Image (cartoon, rainbow, N blue to C red; front, side):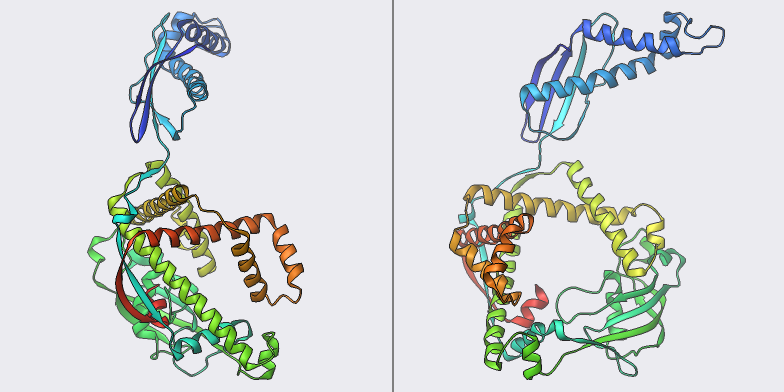
Length: 450
């Protein structure tokens, strides 16, 4: 097919092409479509395949043109992209409706979005707070529990109040029919001492009614503000009635640090446990500091960067989030909830998910730009050091065998290297910025805001 590029408009965010498909190619394809249609058409008053072509064109002209465009346009686009070697994103659009005229060339106007990209500000002009984390005895005690996590026993509460970090199973029923889709059956959730929780987020106000106040087998009739944004504007900020039936509560029981526990941990003495505790706490501290640094730097860069994020990219991420949300809700509630049964998300959910998706894409673009700009690489020494750490964490008796097996896992090793490079890139980016003295926190406070 003879396709000519007659005009090209290249902007920061899009490419617009004007194409011309040769008249003889258009005529040949139209003739082929018309003959095929004529041979199979059953028109009242005519024998099959005997209706005059002029009659068919008059009666079915728009359908014939539509099929012509469906045949010609994708092929013209494919051919042009291969010839011009253009970087595009998603499906093209047609700003101008194509017109078919017998015996003439077909002129097309095609618009493509460019892939997501970002124009970055100068890091040297960015300033960010540099916080400090001081390790306390309480932090070490909490991290000590973390080291014994694999040895904990799940115990069911019988006649004591619910505590933070307890696993709660409950039926939660909203009385307002408009909130019925948010009701949950045999739902497992918790209010953690550290980090985010519970899931779904609209259960957060239950904390004041359950922690240190309610017991297993209690049934509570409550009024609370429903914080989940939703389509019923008249309910926002108002209290709603619900019933919470607490089915069971499970808590973690940690073992005493004795010789038997040390043996299970693969350690010989309390001194070894203390050394591992100090090392793991220091690593956690560095992890939190880096996470803070990344978050603060992103917040500094984003207002000064210029992004191009196609709507199709946002929609793709949102579609993935919706699938994950449905799977999570089904797992949490033990079946298909009414929220899922609707088959599609509410408008308010879509708006929130779109904002989150855009931020997620922008953060990725910033990292990709930094990674490309710095072009850092990993040296053998730092890779080996991290592999030895992993061997130690895995309590590997034969570190050489662990290393060999680790290197042979191509997919796992690739992800491992990518994670190391990710950390190295961000650390380097942070050092490029102007540092201002921030606040001082203990590790518990830092984790609570992490």
